[in-house]
Amino acid sequence: MCFDHPATYARMGLEMTLTAPLAAGIDIGGGSAKIGLVSSAGTMVEQFQVKIPPSQNGTEILLAFLSQLKAKLAAHTEGRLSGLGIGVPGYVDQDHTTTFKSNVPAIDDLDIRGLAETELDCPVFIENDAIFAAVGEQALGSGKGVSRFLMITLGTGLGTGFVEDGVPILTGNGAMGDAGHLIVDPSLEHGCRQGCFGCVESVASGEALNRRIEEVLAADRAGHLPDIVSSGSRPTVRDLIAGVRAGDPACVRIMDETSHWLAMWITGLTHMFAPQMIAFGGGWSAAGQGYVDEIATKSRHMGLPYYFEDLQFVQAELGNSAGIMGAAITALRQTKEMENGTVLSG
Ligand SMILES: [Zn+2]
Image (cartoon, rainbow, N blue to C red):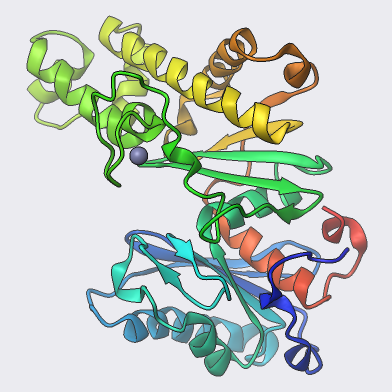
């Protein structure tokens, strides 16, 4: 297939030199980078994590990742790669060379692609991390064989990526715009960390759940969450989810209200993108398939029936490897190194 994308990827001069069978993916997060070596058949050969150094110098930070990658590579492919994908936690510029307004400000506006291509002597492809997660999950996880695939990442924020026939759809800022900031709450009571009011992140993200936990602790002296404080810990979103399983009324109420907000948002996204599958990943997708089903039931109730007739709501399968896989697969697809067409065709 052809990766029908901004001009970024037409880098034929570099492709001419490629013979190495491995590609690599780097998924840069808030505190660390997850890095993996992926075979041309789409299997993870090696995966490791590098903490982001406490430097304010973006070049130093990127070189810390690249030097570790080169050290691992030496054992596999005589130090050579067919291509590298780098997922960044922020916007991506038009030429896919850098990121801006990211969760790791030190790397903002750095020529990431230029630096990485010089260090590794292979083509480098940069995308937003949620987009790469969607690409990976579609190709090798829950979305195998699905032509219209929507990935939702339930984390501190709410990530989205839509993949059509193996190609990610980008609507703005090198991502799916800011789909996590569609406005759903008419009260506009809460602002999100990015600065808008009433968006779905303001009421239904990991950040919003932490606010709800604090509200419960301020109001209630008994219950699952106050009991955790009594035992000397601070409750987390995972404790909130455990509270639902234990039948705690406050926890059940919060997660029920959250599923309502998520369903409003996802119904809107469904009407816009007409996915055949929606997969939920990220830290608090640990709430499980039962919670995904709850969101699905509410969405079906709200939405246009036609869009939901064959729509599947599932849990993502690749966990925190999805972003690495999507990055590496993109590099493989772009450098035409796949051994067969199964992954290439999405
Ligand atoms: Zn917002």
